[in-house]
Image (tube, rainbow, N blue to C red; front, side, top):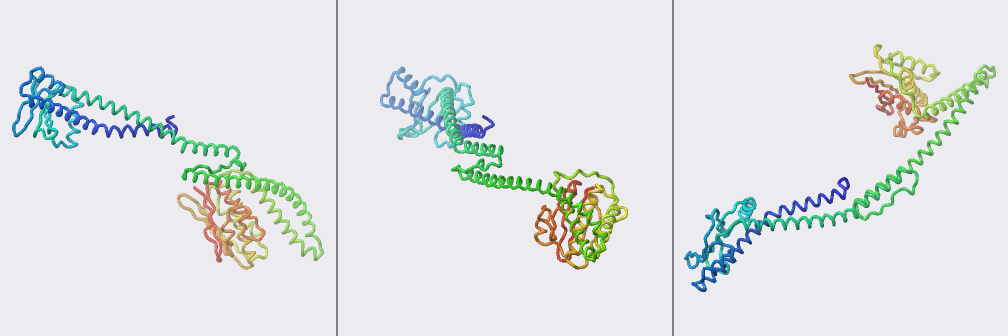
Length: 456
């Protein structure tokens, strides 16, 4: 119960109510002591009036009057004359005097606390004002222990009452909190558990029903989240099924295209002028189709193989990438250059880093070629204490706004007509496997720049 919200609320309520009662307890006991002493003064005044009515009373009657008033003697000041009206033998000397005339709250509380913590039998003198103007002063002597006992009894009754009030109050609050707060929270958690068991079932989405504004807002937010998640899961399932189908089609299509590519090699050897003119276009179309199939199959894998990190001479790897790309330039007016320190050695998987740079350089070349103007592609590198940075820059037309917005999203970030947008996605995934990153530095009408970061 201590670990539950309602249980802790119950305990805190009891503690706070008891604390409030304790803060009230001391002033209440001080007020009780004042009333107790004033009542003894009033009784003593009534007893003295009996003597004033009849100057001669028997010793037995005087003793009975003092006993009823619970005092040892009574001094009354009337007409500026101080008179010992009633008296009896005192067992001990007077050890304290308390004047109730005009006593402030601090004085009354201080004297009450002192009385509670003083168990010794003492005789005290109490001074006050007579009631109904029965004189200018009345003074009595009395035992302090009966006063202390009465105060303790009164305090215990106050504490008992406070305990009962706190328990009843806490119980009522416990029921109220359980019904108004805890039960709605349980309903929300139950709905979350039920939804988690089958998040694709729309019937498991919570229906807001709470009358408490804060809880209803939470239920509405949860409903929105569950609705969006259910839709996303359904879309993800459809995309997974579509991806599986596309991967199967791409696999079979790649085999068909491989056979077709073998036939085109023979077609290129034909002496027919029309065949010679059309054969390169046919070869290019088949090559692009095969590249699309290979990219789709590579992206469709659950994950890339983890990189095998070795020390790689970066300048040699970049030259290899540029040499491979130069073979594909043909009659395009594109120049390739590299500015890599000859001694720079990076820690990476050489095959995967080759794929990343090839993707970026190929994308840049195709963008320049598609623009129909001359351009330059440069690869440079630098390092600091923590990372190696490789920059791939081109002077092409820049990425279109849609491509920049969906740059690393598959099938959406393609920058050229007919592109799949998989190249950058695969490159980013490979660099993440190295603990690095691929970022777009800039892209405008003057060209595009990417930076590859590899941690040391």
